[in-house]
Length: 324
Image 1 (cartoon, rainbow, N blue to C red):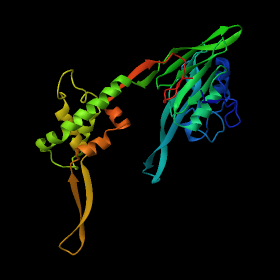
Image 2 (cartoon, helix red, strand yellow; image 1 turned 30 degrees about the vertical axis):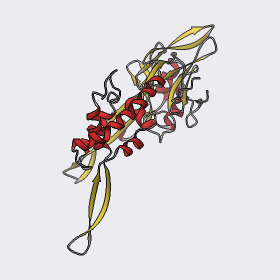
Image 3 (spheres, rainbow, N blue to C red; image 1 turned 90 degrees about the vertical axis):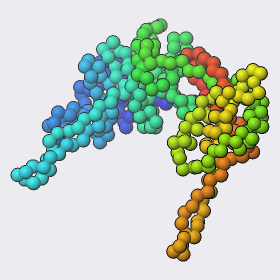
Image 4 (cartoon, rainbow, N blue to C red; image 1 turned 60 degrees about the vertical axis):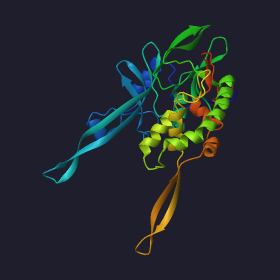
């Protein structure tokens, strides 16, 4: 299985790897805080690397040290004597990304994980034995194991904790919080076949019932359209009970389909001033229109003929259901 493992060793020329608690503590303590008005107003901002990147900082929280995103901004007020705006303080926002406690346990808190910069910086911060990896859009921590194989722990957005342990004279990490098991979503072939068969019966029923319902072609009411789409995506309206001629929810589904797939056409209509004005005409879909809409992925997305299968913890997989 192909993927990308990030393994940046330096961040803007600085070694920021958090290999042990004393190292991280020393990096914090030996980094000079930003001077000037920040220091004057109590902002302890210690850049992670080059000093112009002030939003990436070494951070202390109790007896834990690590890296945080820090944003601060000046708060000003008008001095009535000088008639000038003066700095009265700073607004401050701190978001820890990766922290280490005195026992060497790592705590990772998801923040800005849609950025290449965060991925590369995180790969430079992580201690030996843990790397950041991506498979498509899915993100993992790739954690070395004593047997030589790597475990992949999915980054789901939860706060994750990794605790160090020794094996064969080497240090490894074991997750203790924030780890989730993934699931494969697979087409249930028997159910998908049943849905296709039911769709034929439903569409034969559609036109005569649509003519009787008296639904008005109104494309301007987005609330009705959203409600119709929500109903259709509920997944329980197509399949009939065994032996029934008509489905329990078929009438509601027909009304929802008429609302969701109303066709609108824009027209320019002459006005009394010799110009033109906007005009819209709305037309209800026919059974043929609905048949063209409800095929392939659109139908499956609505009726959800799927089944789920657990993926072994530590095994990544692609959205196209191929395992590693």
